[in-house]
Length: 124
Image (cartoon, rainbow, N blue to C red; front, side):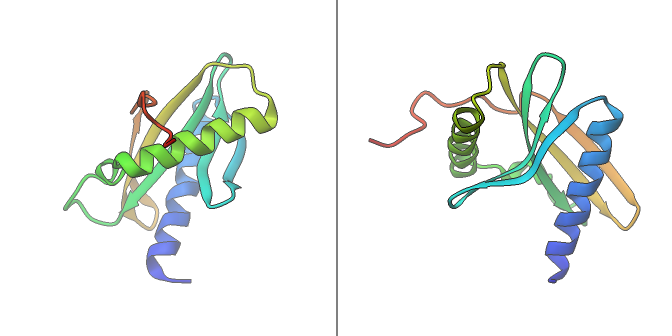
C-alpha cells in the first residue's frame, strides 16, 4: 500500500476513535455507491452525520481545503443516495475532520456543519 494510502487509513481510524469518544454511533465507513464514496457515516441522538476525513502529514496546508466544490457535489450525491437507500428519516449534517500528523501523534480538528448542500447540486 502506498504511503499516502496508509496515512489516509490511519487518519480514518483516528477519526472513528475520536467520534466514538464523542458518543457518535458509526453506521458505515467507506460506503460506496457506484463511483461515489462517503468516508464515515455516523449518527448522533438526532442527526445523521456525513464526515469527510482529510489527513496530511505536515503543516504546509490545512487538510480541509482539499474539500473543493467538486468534492462537495460528490459527497452530497453520495449522501442523497445513502439516505434514499437506507430510507433514513433524520436531519443530515456534513462535517469535515481534519487530521495533521504522523504515527500516534495527531492534531484533530472537527469542523461541524462544514458545508451545506448547494442549491444547484445536480446537473440536468
